[in-house]
Length: 291
Ligand SMILES: [Zn+2]
Ligand SMILES: [Zn+2]
Image (cartoon, rainbow, N blue to C red; front, side):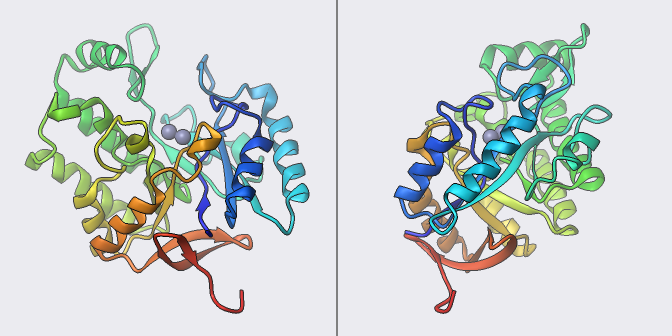
């Protein structure tokens, strides 16, 4: 099996175990590469992000693991970086100075409450409902539009290498609780976002976490979006967003089958320190014969 996973968490943020436990699990599964992408330290209290004082220790530990696993597993160091205009993003100076191997940019916060508390859109449904009422006066279309607007701003202003879970806001919308994902306005927002991404080198990850956590019935992004991504020739990669060692390749087989069905012939992967296209099947990347 030659899978790779570049979106993962460990106990430097909200993952369950020490980084080494994930590296060992990845090596045991015969993975080709594993990238650590802890939640970036935030400029305000955030229960699930890395503490700023641990950033240097994190860097040291991942670099140490790179050496320890040399020849067995390629290890890479990244961060999952929030984008909040004027506050934090992939181009923030301390992130640039961290010399990451690659960057993942994700939207977890949309605007803020009157008291300045940032509204977490992938937290509990109670927090979601609260922000929707208090910040957007219950107007779900405005709230979702703002989510995609922020995604487009991130791509235009501080484009990361990888766009994290692009339609994550749908986790709050099981059974179309708030809106129909087939509504024209929703499709328009998604397509406008894909058009912006298509003008960059960014890769859209196909994130399996919603599936194996049973929060969603489809990957982030869902199937019709994948068709639109393929039409625009935007590259994709499969990531698990693992927070536990047993999740490092969860739902990869089904997702590879889905990508095949949509028509993708290759996926992007960061191998030998560079982004490369790989053919793939349900067992993982197909490596060139002389690799
Ligand atoms: Zn995330
Ligand atoms: Zn994540």
